[in-house]
Image (tube, rainbow over all chains, first blue to last red; front, side):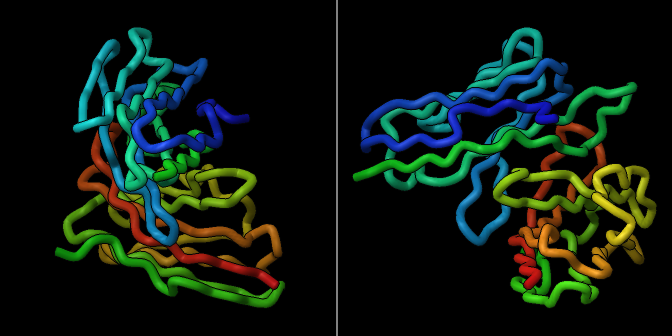
Length: 115
Length: 115
């Protein structure tokens, strides 16, 4: 059972276009993180969101956390070839009162930005 | 500053052999996590250590998998009698504390191929 649904799985766009990646669950998150992973490397944290309704910006990346803390989105404005990579959402789910650091990951979105 | 290191970076083994994968976390990080990344399953949690104890082993797929951590530092993941379905990238991560919201720093992974 995939607790985190991430979409789309693949995204191929031209430089300068905008894009949005979605991450949804029927469960409530205690916190949600977005990672970027390049081939041969481990995931690198981009942002952590904790509060429902929170919006965080990181240069051309905008992250939103849903009011009910069950969904999140990553929006990239004016994508660059350097944005190419695997984007992963990951959540610490609240289950039986436990909300420690164990992460549940979405399936990932492979983004390719063409020059 | 040293990040999380893992060894070996690549391991090819024959079906039925045992393998040991090593993780050196960031110094001072009390929490250590093992994850497995494969094409079909995405990134899956295996086990979590707090100090030398493993309060959550729920992600270990079978009793052929075991892990230990010594001195609150180095961890070893052992897979006995390897099977082809064990082929994957095994990622280790550490964080300052084992609580939701604390950043997990990932190593580059060990790519395991079982022939």
